[in-house]
Image (cartoon, rainbow, N blue to C red; front, side, top):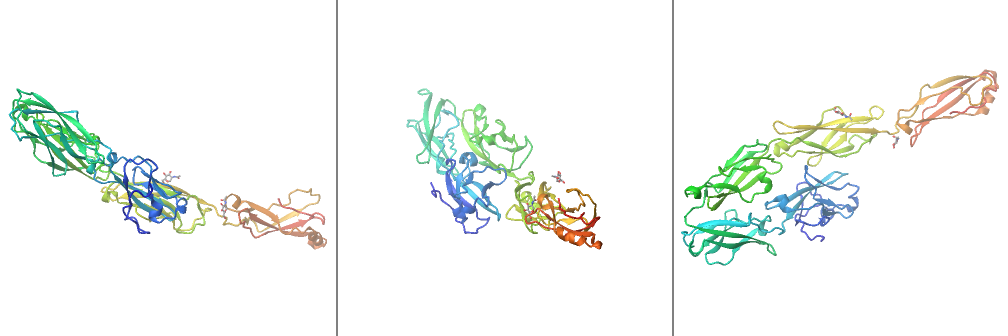
Length: 539
Ligand SMILES: *[C@@H]1O[C@H](CO)[C@@H](O)[C@H](O)[C@H]1NC(C)=O
Ligand SMILES: *[C@@H]1O[C@H](CO)[C@@H](O)[C@H](O)[C@H]1NC(C)=O
């Protein structure tokens, strides 16, 4: 399956954001199917994908449809991709995904161009089309038939109609200005109600797939005594624009069709034709008045244009169609969202100014100015945001850190969009500073004195010296040792009467790797007798 699907846009090696890499492949591929090798296509080193935390990300709350295999660099299908469910009748179905790499941060846009496969049959809304045709209808009179719908697009949508052979009607298939096929039956031989009061014909719609799929419906014609006309819409297309979030019951547009007939034959009612179920939850069409009003929340971020096909019917079932195109305009109704994509906490206190400690992504689902976001830190902290690619920022240090002064930072990042009024949000980032063994221990006093008495028991304390080290744990744990413990020297010295004092030198180091040590402290011992100052040790 490798490389079976075309890679549409080839990619210059360092190509940037503005040229997404496009993979084109059919819908409904199995989970795990290979779409292409993105590492190869982007010239990335496969061995570094893991260490660069390569991952597929999406914009906003959208689903992730593909995954990257970190061992091979292959892009695989992660979710069922049903083109009809995702894109309906749109001519081009594009899913935008992003490949994010760190160290250094890189972002590559991936567009999945989902191709239609012929997986839907044409179908008619109902099992039987009921028509009433007057026996006085003249030969050559045309009657529009209800359309078949096919959820697939292009060649896979309905391409032709056929009707079973019969003596009264033949079929004519035409295209309207939008290129949609519709069928009419044309009277071949005049009907005679007294001879045959009804007839049934089978109509078949066929799509253009290989192999083609088809759907059928029965047309039941009741032969009437009276003559009538089909309704006629005042416009073939009604175009309106509507702000998103408009309140319920707001009137969007009123469609209107007139019928030249009198009485029941001229009574026009309106219905949605083949309209996506989701759209029917949002718009209400009044059967009698043709008023279309809002029934559910209309969200620009979900759908920007609605195309509603409306059918008008008169009392005897003659029909005509019109389209209502509703363009939704954006309102600033989404606050920016700040997402911490990566955070190196704790950060060592000796990190150089300019060290990247985190990656922040900001998203705003609104469009244009409403979706333009600025981020800032409004505190006096040694960190700043550096705009990176697209809507990514690097959080970097701007000065030296000192854990012994401040070991925690609570950084508040504010994001504000450019809508009017603007919307904003904040995110707190808690960052801790990790210790580095950068402080040597220090004695509290530079010199100490002690008097050593007679009859000292071994192990008794003579004097205590003390040093402190502000570093953390073992980096701040102090260990003492006696530098000059030359006891014989001491004996020699104190044999002279004016040298009943003895100098000891104590050093201290911390337990860091490597350890730091302090300048030594001098301990002067005053010995009461020559044998008092025999030996010492430090605990
Ligand atoms: C950080 O600061 C914000 C606002 O000043 C506060 O609401 C939040 O509780 C703080 N978080 C921590 C972990 O101190
Ligand atoms: C002590 O400092 C070293 C660097 O000098 C550091 O790697 C280590 O993590 C520190 N130890 C602790 C417990 O913070």
